[in-house]
Amino acid sequence: MSPQAILDSHVHLIPRSAANSTSHAWMHDGHPLQRQWDVSHYLDATTNESVRSGQPQAFQLQGFVYVETDRALGPKDLDPHERWRGPLDEVAFVRRLVEGTPREGETNPDARSGALLLGSVLWAPVDQGPQVLLQYLKLAEDVAGPLAWRKVKGFRYLVQGIKDQRAFTKLVTGDAFIDALKLLGKMGYAFDVGVDQRQGGVWQLQGLLECIRRVRSGCTQDEHGVFVLSERPASPSGSREVQCADTAT
Image (tube, rainbow, N blue to C red; front, side, top):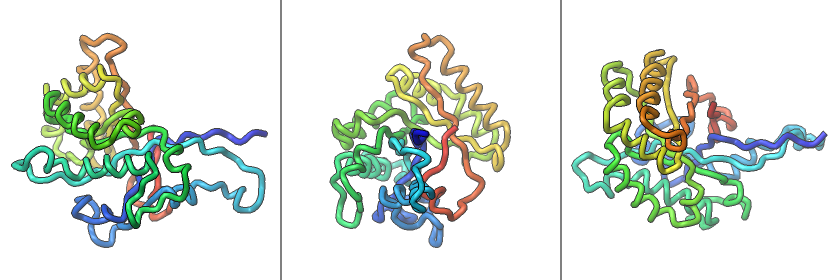
């Protein structure tokens, strides 16, 4: 029986230079992810147990989609390029993965690294409306370079941390958010939807459904865009599989 082909749809990698609370506000000291997670760790985590034991391979990894790791933003009064330094640094990291040009201390095990990264989902300021979004996309494209930019399949802006229902609904159903998502759809990009029903509430999902309804209102089928519902894990498990990748549904 042929091994099952697998495309891993949601993978996070973190270079050593960004494994800190300055680059990631959520990464407090002692956090289980506070270390470098690179392609070599990912390949080790996804190696079949059957292969380890010398048995026939159960699946064949085709590649993965890199998903942004919620890099920290600078103060709002900074120049946009500086405010977005964290996400743009991540775009540069993705470029190094794709081009196989790691910085000192970043380990790419072999030429497979760029080939395995089949797509990426980057951060974007969709809360700021289409004009600011376009400004960011231009900067991100310049940082990414043509090879890595061709692999960009979509964007995300995490809203799962907003636990106030009024604030959440105001954001995701507001004109700026809606118009930015419409623009992404017209440009052919997907949008990763991050909701947290366990710690937030079912109203988060309901609010996003209303958001999607408004985004699709008045759009042609070709302009609707694709929405990917990302599962929020309950808590870090500490296992190498979860640390290297979590699953999109």
